[in-house]
Image (cartoon, rainbow, N blue to C red; front, side, top):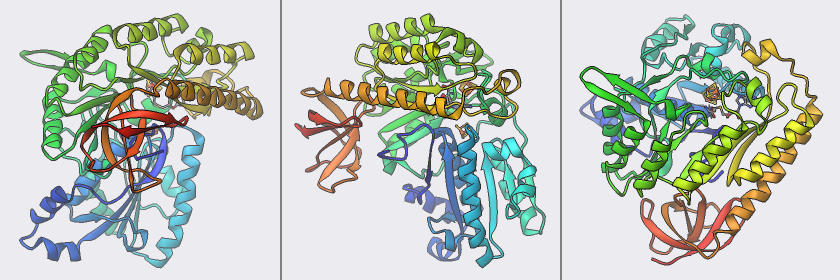
Length: 481
Ligand code: SAH
Ligand code: SF4
Ligand code: F3S
């Protein structure tokens, strides 16, 4: 992955803020001599796992902790507080966190006063059980309880372990300005809604994130405006299902996702707007027409198919079938012809036959996904599927099907990238490429990573790049303006 914003489900420790200025503000608010406080400040080490929304939540946590006088650090050894913001989506995501907690044990042995907190979806799923299972944990905090962190920390200081895993129907953290921890001062995540009401049978998210609720559009637009004025040039609007965004208030017409997109796109033509995730059952032509009408709304839709077979989709409780999904693909191609389409795919869901798996492969060919996140089905305790359907596909078969899906996606990505050779794209510069400091990298509207000779380009610039060659993951080109 080229940067911390490119993945759907992945792990990466968060760095210190790029937002030095705002960070400084937070500390000056507490003292007249900011520098002095910096030396005295307590340090927080924060590691995040899971989806973009979890990374976005870590920025909320960093902001709440900044108010309490904690500076972020990337050095575990100098931390007073270690937070791990966790994911429960698949068993291996939880195992990764368990492994990391074991490593933290050694750090705690050296520093008895160290506070260790488990945040996020695993905290919500396992609750106080985590305190028993992981003896070193002092603090367990669910995704809707971060405003309670200052109180919970006080409780820990007084020698009591602390737990708050209450889910809320209202909390959107709309009043908190996140401390930006990633994105190099160019890209930012903006959460527009929380929770999920969909109950896909395989998915733990409705249990870990609670009921769906949308955030006040005015606060979203203000956050985007503020980001733009501080040099940010791309925002990604985040929700588990952005197409069901809906804000109602007295004396004003309801605001749905297409309207929100229009308002954010109007912040400035130089602010590129992305969004994720779209749900095939809910994505409307109105959203597609809004994309077509605004050049600064990126031409990329993440439209997870999960399976290409209608019977499997029914058991997954996705509430669309193969034909419906194909109709949505056709609508995208018709209304936003240059749009790239990406997906999530699950291999070996309960009862999946070879024919049903073959339908997933044929759907992938039909959709010509430019990229997919691909997973072997992992049964999650308490979900509808865990209660209703046996997890009856052997690990060998699941893995073989997954490998077939991955091999096909590699082929499709390469075909898709080769078709871009000779074309010129507007690219938003993110910074030096990972392989060479003389080359810069950035994404085009279709969210494809482009690497090019970087002479004179700075992060946040839009440049034009002609594509000369490619790999399966990257377009390689020459800057022409
Ligand atoms: N809200 C998004 C998905 C969020 S979870 C949507 O509806 O598309 C990200 C992805 O993880 C899902 O799209 C799915 O492909 C995968 N996933 C979720 N639960 C899973 C499970 N139990 N086993 C394997 N993959 C799973
Ligand atoms: Fe999970 Fe389905 Fe909600 Fe996505 S839409 S978060 S897959 S329940
Ligand atoms: Fe995200 Fe993982 Fe939770 S995918 S919503 S952090 S279970």
